[in-house]
Image (cartoon, rainbow, N blue to C red):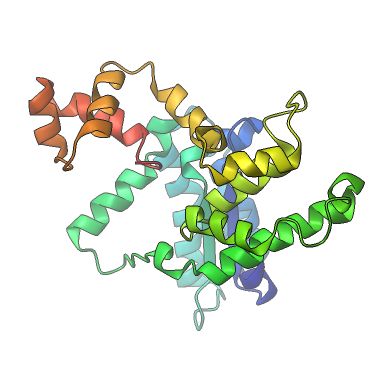
Length: 275
């Protein structure tokens, strides 16, 4: 999406958080990176951003993220719209993704802000159910391309033949993916490369394991769970969620366990990307 809008000349900025990638896993440099890109990409905006950054403290990490975004993004853009030549006929896109990958949970907490605005019924919020748009054919195509690329770069995979995995095996894997690209990516990665360089199993053996839906291929969630495991009452809450036949509201879950609601929220918010 970002590349498509960039090709149209309508991408203001993009930022993708990524866990374990230095500053990309924190909010340090988040606002200044967006400001820099907007200044370069939006016609007429540069002079307004250059005026703002004359103050060396405006983007300092000691300031709250809200304050940085207000000063570095909102204020100069508003001035550009009111006083400059910023085009208005077609909107610019600003893409931010991977917020669950950011380690600064308190600073980012954007998902909670989105949830609040949605619940308030704000007219500017448009909620799109992307799961309903992930068609099986798209996931199948992506999976076939993944295996084809592996064959292209490895004689080991070439030796398995161009019909590996067989179509019936692909169909079984697609049933398990249920339209999820992240599941498809995780499954394909497990089959092709295993759990690391010391994984002794062959791709065929790992395919057999994947077809049995073994827990080993769900390691994509291990990191999220392990980071949350130190929060008080984590094991009690998550095990109760697993065992409940009928889902409960957060307040009801807390009451069942004799906890304050905020104690349950503290755990569940951390896990919201996988629950």
